[in-house]
Image 1 (cartoon, rainbow, N blue to C red):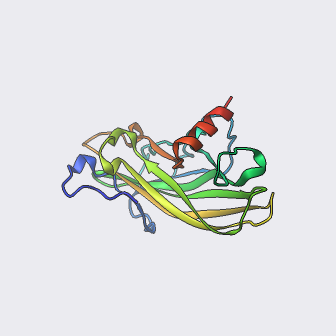
Image 2 (image 1 turned 90 degrees about the horizontal axis):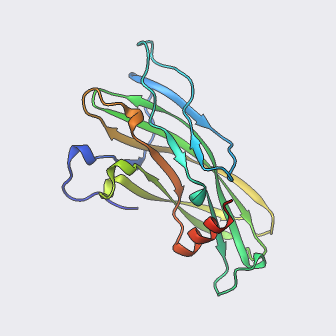
Image 3 (image 1 turned 120 degrees about the horizontal axis):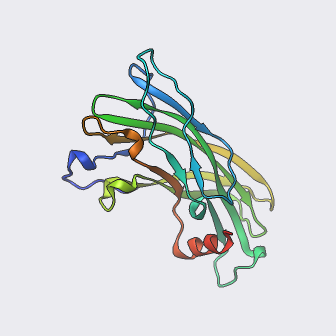
Amino acid sequence: MLTPPQTESPRLNAMLTLRPFRACPRLFRPLHLRKWALRVPAILALAALAGCNRGLVPPCPPVRVDSATATLTKFKDGPSRDLADVEYQAEILGYKGQCVYSKDSVRVTFDVDFAITGGPGAKGGSTPLYYFVAVPQFFPQLPGKRIMQVIHKLPAKAGAREVFTESSVSVRIPLKKDEAGASYDVYVGFQPDNEQLEYNRSRTP
């Protein structure tokens, strides 16, 4: 996991952490999407209006998943990239959560649904999966992106698929006076190496 620098401007303090969500005493909107097509670059729109009986609630920052980082294919060590050498394929299926507005920030908190499918080269056992949560507007400063790790037991049988959830992923975005939270984007995706990224791009129509 990346750590923030020792000194940072409050404007760059987009803290991406795993933490439980506290019940809403402030303005909030629900957001959810559990299923989407991997062949389409996914712009995961936010759900309908809700709140804490305080009138209209500003829209949440949009959460996006790009098709190039929505899946991760792991091959066995070696030069071959034949399908028979696939250890597993992981997918991001969707998310569900909400955003909460305070006086000077908005916090987006959500659960991410993953799936992992064993390939012909599956070994079984616990497997670390690395994914990122990022706010591009804060790049290139480190607080603009955090790499997370989730560990799940890999199905030892080829074709076996398991779905699991990473809970309470939280992003705090500081806002200037009258600044719209929806002007910021939150991206979620796997953290592939260069070869895995090129493999994904080669399969995208």
